[in-house]
Length: 171
Image 1 (cartoon, rainbow, N blue to C red):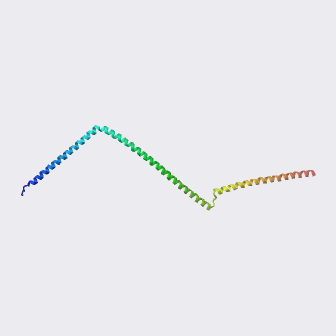
Image 2 (tube, rainbow, N blue to C red; image 1 turned 90 degrees about the vertical axis):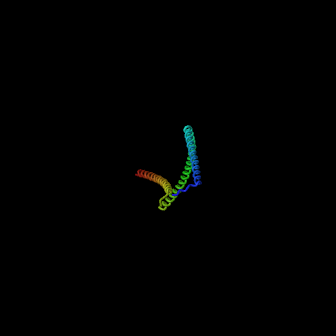
Image 3 (cartoon, rainbow, N blue to C red; image 1 turned 60 degrees about the vertical axis):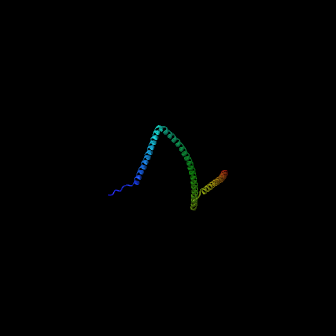
């Protein structure tokens, strides 16, 4: 195998590449070291101030909870009143529809009963009043007849007694 001598230009570019790689690696190593130190500092600070930070976060969370809870209760009240209003409207409409249905049913029932010849409540009441009037009239007529009969009976009895006396005296 033939070995060709390397040119000096190739050697220069390889050296520059190594120099660039070495500078890049150093820069990356330095950045990583700074990130590591920043994390360690944050950790140390969190340990030192952890209790105060934790207490502050708890207080802030409690305030946030109160605000959201009052907002939720307010919304819940609004929704409840709207639902109550809607329920009232639906109930009123249902009542109206029920009344219409009831009236239609009563009307149809009355027509069917009329076709069958069944008397209405008014007809029965009118008949009742007529019966009461006739009963009163019959009672008056009966009393009048009784008086006339009593008057005739008294007259006969008086005539019969007179006739008996006349017979006794003639005899």
